[in-house]
Length: 262
Image (cartoon, rainbow, N blue to C red; front, side, top):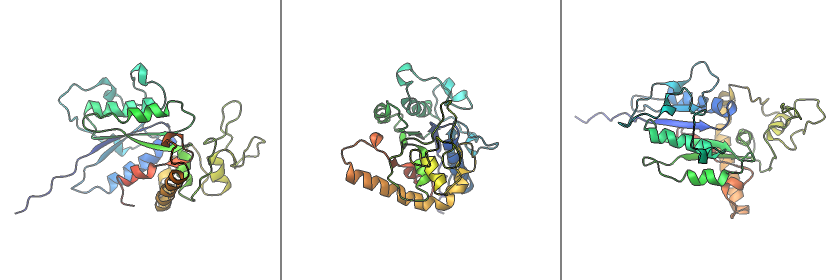
């Protein structure tokens, strides 16, 4: 009699730069992966920081896989507020390092760092750090430029506009909600990608929204196609430019494709 295949056991860490939009979005991914699991797949995805949801599938118990002493970092509900060595404290290097600590501790087989260009000066250092092998694995980077919101836009159209920012703010630091306000400073989508999304009527995007995955899921195939086309366009027109200096760029689709057949 043929032996029953052993279940595929994977524990995966996704460290996000954002504290609302990205965690809530990837929470939806983690939930779909959990709901689609069968007896041969025991994939668990941990999102960090913890999304603003009452119930998070990524908080399932993840067995410790190493005989080594657990790092204090993993005793937190969230590692995003954890300490890193001083030389790794700059953004976005910090997110790569936090993901590496997850691999070092032995709880996770895979780790991803999700961050944007967003004016960070240490982008090259983050990509270089991710090349280091930790327990046989490298931290995978899911990068968007200028912001994660460009990935959202790609759910609706192929767009190579080099937006300046994700959202415009006033002098006090409050979001203007461009495209949905009557304020004089409203750029009407000329400078910020979120304003462009609203002006086009694609989505009444809010950084506080928690249903982003379910709102965008029907358009995911289009986003995957558009994202790949943007990369082809950039590589054709700017072949000598490093990924972390391109605008726009998104390879979020590669992370999602790792877990979903779309």
